[in-house]
Length: 442
Image (cartoon, rainbow, N blue to C red; front, side):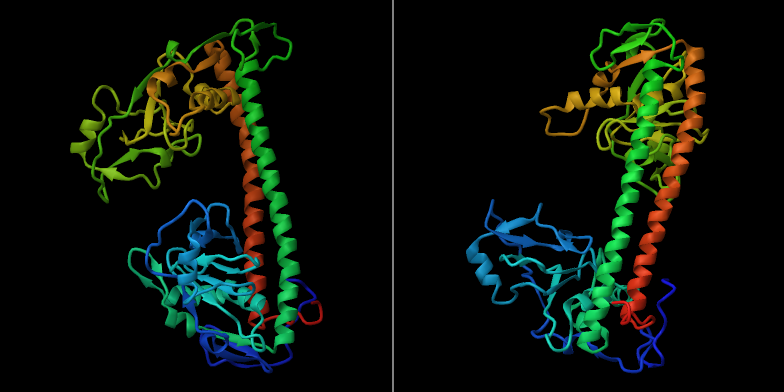
C-alpha cells in the first residue's frame, strides 16, 4: 500500500460482518435505499434481433469495467420503446451482471440509446446520496464481490436475485468524500492499468523474439557463414546449401484421430484433445478420461501416442503442437492428429511447426475458408527446411536453452502483472471500505 496513506483516526463497528469496522463518520445503508428508481433488469423474453437498430447488451458486453458495443446485438426501435417501460439505461447508471458472469460492473458513459437483457441489472444512484463512480468501485471491491458470490444461487450458472442486490450493504461516507475516493481511485487505477498495458506489450515483444529465434534457427541454421541456396519456396527463401526443402510427409507419418465420440469418466485413460496441446509439451493435468473399452477403439491402426510423438491441432488452436514426453498410456480425442518419425528429431519438427513459415502455410490454407480447420492431407504437404539429423539435434539443444530464457522472462513479467492486478483490487477495497484515508491525496 502507498506509504503516505494512513487509516482514519477512529472506527466503529459497521454491524455487517463482511464490512467490519468503518470510519466513525461513515454510515451504511442497503443499496435499495440509495437508488433513485427501483433496481430493474432487462426483459426476460428473447427478443427478435435485427441487423441494426438499438444496441442490446448482455453481460458479455461489460469488458474490463467498460461497455463494449463492438459485438452487441440489435433490436428494433419498437421493441426498445416497449422494453423502456421497465428499464431505460442512461449516463451514470450502474450496470451489474446478475447471471452468467455475475459481478461484472460498469458505469454507463454514453449518451445514445441502448437497452439491456435480463442477465444485467440497472442501478440508478440517488444524486444526493450516492456517487455513481464510488458505487462502481465499491461493487468492484473484493468485499462486495465476495458478498455477491455468497448470495448467489448455484445451478448451471451463478445467479444473484434482484432482492439480494438491493440488500447489499453499502458503506456510506458523505457525497463529497465519495467523490474524493472515486477521483483518487480513477487516478491510481489508471496508473496501474497503464503499467499493466506496458508489461503486456513487453510480453508480446518477448514472444515475438521467441518466434523469431525459432524461425531463424529452423530455416537458416546455427552457422552464420554457411553457404546458402534458394529453397525454391517463396516463404522459406534461402536455406543452407546442404539442407532440403521438402514436404513433411517425406520424413514424417501423420495419423488422424478416430472421428469417434466417446463418453468421459472420472477415472480412466487420458484423452488428448486441443486443451492438452497449448504448450510445447503435452499437458495431461486436466485431460478428460475414458475406459479401456473406448481407448482400444481410438488407438486402432497404430494411433496409440507414445513418447517422442507429436500431437498437432488441426481445428481449434490450429497449428499448435505438443511433444509427448510421457510413457503414460493415452489416446487421441477429437480435432488432433499424431505425427511420428523413425529417422528425424521430432522436437526439431515441433520447433518447425511453431515457426513463422509453418504459420504462414496454415494461414494460406485458410484464406476464404469459413472454418478454422485443415485436414491431414494438407498437413502432410507442409514444406519444411530439413537439415541432417545431427544438426537437428544441435538446433534443438540451442533452442531449448534460449527459449527457456525467454520463457522465464515472460513468466516473471506475467507474475508482475498479476501482482499489479492484486494490488489494484486491494487498493480499491481499502479505499471504499475506509481502511485508508485518501482525502488528503485525492
